[in-house]
Image 1: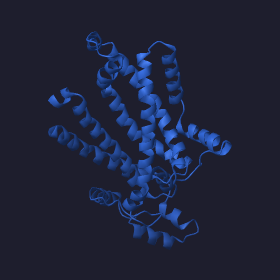
Image 2 (image 1 turned 180 degrees about the vertical axis):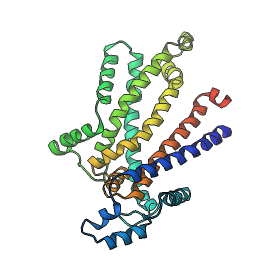
Image 3 (image 1 turned 60 degrees about the vertical axis):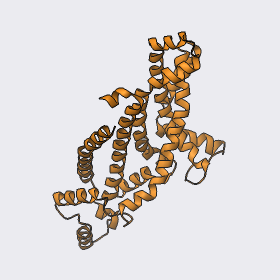
Image 4 (image 1 turned 90 degrees about the vertical axis):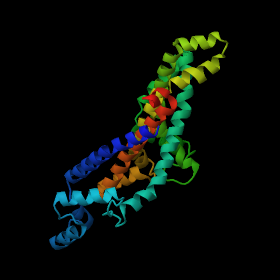
Length: 306
């Protein structure tokens, strides 16, 4: 297991270097001058030149790249051009809100998807299965930028049950979590149904039933457990996509997380903050995938043997 962990960690190093290089290149190709955006159109050329020199933006791109990579390796992502604070401090301030929203969305998705997928697989071909499949199809077809405003209009504007924006109470978390979690639940439900249904057709399930094992135990302890490998794989990918989807959801509900910080930084041409936010999202993807690979070893002994 230790060798598996070390191998996966070593494989992430070139991935992170490639992501950091790509982020630096793309950010500097975005049109617009951050210095001009900070000082305004009426700023004098002397002030623009002086601020550009202070921020180090007049240096060659290779020098800026070397400084960026050196700082990223040591955890120093530079200073935000918009707030004049360290980027790591700005992200650390916003990160708890994003983690709270991501975990809540995944909890919503899991609580809805797993029971729905298992029931649909056990009752395959019946009206319950068709209803579950229809609900999952509707969930997949609803993007967050459409579902979020719809929920806000219904539950906040029309009914007045929940707050429409901000962060503070449990009520503030409900709408953003459901907006992010509903499409994920639909994907997981369909995958869970297909995986469990495939396992229910295996001979070991019939053998367990022939030995007198109850149907519930056969489904949960045998079929569902052996169907977890593809479910866990997609679960890890979806958790990474939650951070990406949070960019839209946090903007809709004014949730003070990393996603909203990314949008604000892009609008202000805040290169260091944009780079830091995108690197954080990429790092999350990599860490989650490493965790999923290690979880394979726990769920499937054949992975440990390899």
